[in-house]
Image (cartoon, rainbow, N blue to C red; front, top):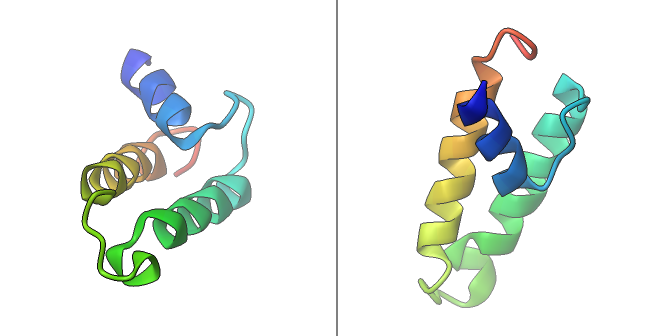
Length: 65
């Protein structure tokens, strides 16, 4: 779906990604944008929320369920 494609783009993944790669990329981006990893800097908070939303969308998608 278009929503899935947008979510993949947020995560920087191709459409043929598997469940394991999806989880790995999600974990990588959460580590990168989490305020605790950035000295409490909350400037990446909106990006973190975008990543979480994209992962939540994709993990429930039929291709990854």
